[in-house]
Amino acid sequence: MATIEENLREELDLLRQEMAKVTEELAAFRLAQKVLTEVTTGCSSRPGGIIKAALQKTLDVCADVTTTEKGSLFLLDPGSKKIVDAILTRTEVTPEQRAKLIGSVLDKGLAGWVSRNLEIGLITDTEQDERWLTLPDQPYIVRSALGVPIINGKQELLGIITLLHSQANHFTSRMAESMQAIAEQIGLVLENAKLYGQLDTYSKALDNELEKGRQIQIDFLPYDIPKLDDWEIVACFHPAKQVAGDFYDVFTFENDQIGLVIADVCDKGVGAALFMALFRSLIRIFSGEIQFQGTAAPILQAHKPVNGDWIGESNATNLAHLNALQAVRRTNNYVAEKHWQMSMFATLFFGILDPKTGILSYINGGHEPLFIVNQDGIKQTLNSTGPAVGMMPNMKFGIQQVQLETGDILIGYTDGVTEAKSPEGKLFTDNRLKEIVEKPADSASELMGRIKDNLFNYMDDAPQFDDITMLAVRRNP
Image 1: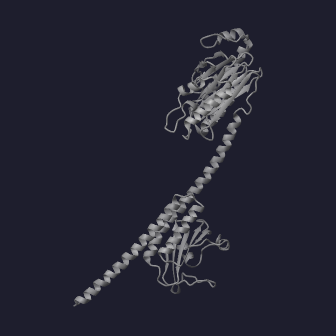
Image 2 (image 1 turned 90 degrees about the horizontal axis):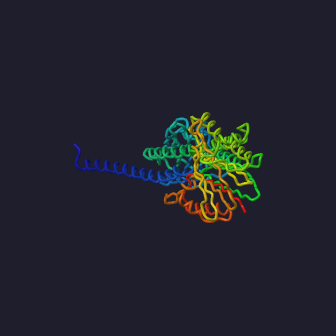
């Protein structure tokens, strides 16, 4: 029968074992806590230098907590299992070491065993374990070692952590379990970095393509706005993204008439940009084709402007304007019939200007009202004469005529101007724009500059949600 003293000794031994276990678990917890801080930093960082720095610090923390004398972290290519990078404890790999390691395969010793078995390799005494390979020129003594695989969710080997010590029985199974948990976290970091790298590569390729699209779109805008005696024409184009749905156009017909276009394709992004190019091309092509044949007078009588008669004295000029404006109807039918499934349309103003007389014939297809202003303020408002272009086939678009007199400025814009927002989220509004254009301006450039200054000062650092486009035409004295 055991004596009281023997029972006390047995209980004391059990308490010592429990204390040792608790101490070991506490050390493992502290190790995991420190390393997870570094790993979390790596997870939120961009791949490359910052990830590598986080892994370097992670390895150093592991070595500190486990009192490791030598340690390494090899990153491997999952397919070939060749080393793609190497990190050593408390030091960077020298160029000579890197050149020697990169591209090699870990197929021998402890690292080779871990690579083949995808399991933790714990060697308590290298002299008694055949998995350890002592190199002839090894500059330090190793008696215990720990190898931990870094594996992703597909059970692919991403890397191996190796910790070494000169004394036997230094590494314990508890340390091995802690290192395995840490390796799992590092595996997540490396997998996230890989995915981020793929996303970054794709994003750069997409940005490159969008940049090409942006340049192509800019090429669709008039490179040189026609220079006319006694006329000033200026434009402003600020896309919200790399590609835009807004556009403007100024071009000359064979009879010296001038085509003026400002439009806003619904939606944003690449789809809107593609339809912007389509609308622009269709307007140009259709407006250059003769639509009506026969005597001018009866044709003009049958297609009189809305709420009035033709104000131009030349029937030939009026007929030329009428012919060109048929481009809106034909563009509407083409888009509605050929691309109805895309549900794309555009608000569009298309005007034909006779520079000699100042006569402007136009169709406003659901676009923002344009203003004719002079020294006294807003002289006339050119409201919509029909629906947006491309919504349904065979829609009717009314024609109107006005005359720009000396000193008059025609100003057109897209809703990106009036719907621009301040940092507080408040709209610029139609009223604020009207207050600006009602003030006298000595040139179209002056008026355009005043609007831009007020608009961008109002927006300040708020994000631009929509394209901003303006077109101004002045009949100079």
